[in-house]
Length: 269
Image (cartoon, rainbow, N blue to C red; front, side, top):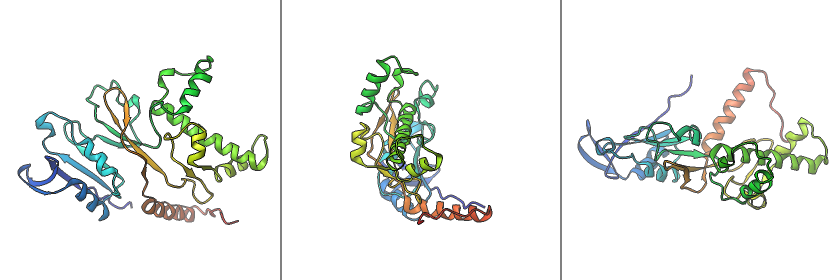
């Protein structure tokens, strides 16, 4: 049976956490960022900030606050705010252009967390336009370059091709077997210098994949905000809580292996 999730909801008014009865006779109880971090350190799985005046005042809820808390060392897996527009933050879920453009609801201010950068400022996108679209080889709308799903495809392709190159350096320039390709992924080392060579600085974070860590070192996300027409990134890379999540993954994997009679690979051999 899964453990219950702890999700504190903090009422906010005037930029401060408040306490009252049915939103009346509110009294100040502290700074939202500090209290959010305290709840997170105490074991909260997620944090919700309820902007008690957003609906009455006809404005967006505290999008900036979600970004400020999410950019701290808070250990909660998700941070969001509630108000006139409901939940305004999503972690790597419905935050592509197709999810918000023409949605029929006031999506401006909606925040998402992404494992890659949006926008087409990186040199790789200029090269894509020149060598693919200008050559008449583009298979999709050129206007989608820089959008969430397009960039996700570019990022994923970069990982695959770099793993292939890594494997070929070990096994030769030939058609690779599945086992050899796996070796390439498990020795993938995307340094900041290599990412710059690929023209993808800022699009993906540096990472190193190993036999024992298929997630890669230092996984991270960036927060992006919808302005009504496009996404704008407003944070640097925010590191994942691997010290919290990794032990849970390993324990669950160990239990699954025992229940299904699976002998885990020995990465030391």
